[in-house]
Amino acid sequence: MLFTLIRIFLGVDMALGLFNYAAWTWLAGQPFNIWFLLLSLFSTHLPDADMIPYLIFRKRYRLISHWIFAHHPLLLLSLVALASFGAAKIWVPDAAGYTVGLMTTGVFLHFAHDGLHLQGFPWLSPFTFTQFRLRGGKFSAVPQRELDEWRQHVSRWKQNDPSAADEIIVRTPPITWTQLLLWSAGAIAVAFLIFERGFHNHIS
Ligand SMILES: [Zn+2]
Image (tube, rainbow, N blue to C red; front, side, top):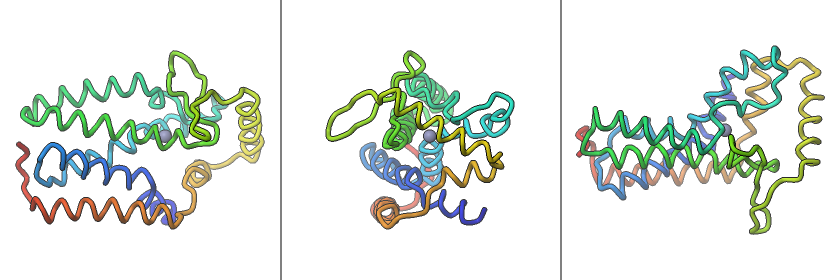
């Protein structure tokens, strides 16, 4: 489990969270604030919260994928925009645009990462469950045959009755050099921001 935690910590979503934070904070001219950095890291992981109901109900409902309620981009992005706007208006009224931008872009980056999957991503769900992918510079629907093959492949794996830990491990691939490079670049971007802006807890 320790290896899995390290893989999550050094994962692509974590690197995207660092970049998202550095870019928005830079653009909005905000000071470094640890809570907003954590908020950005939270947003790039948020859609995977549906792993929790998936792990609880996967056997009862024979679930194949954990993309249950939080992997509907149109719904989740609108919800996150509204919720972060409401919360920002209460706690940081002068930085509402910054908060909404940071959160919604973070969630979008998570979907973009999921979209690199060979089986594509249901960008228009819940209106259509067609999965789209970018291949050779073209954005197109993944043929149903390929999706069926993938489902069969996962169903065969499920016959071995994988534990909850197995389900998590299979979704956290080994760390690659490209990933480490991406993560380091994200960390350098944040470090540069701290160096340039200094530590302030006041968000303006
Ligand atoms: Zn996801």
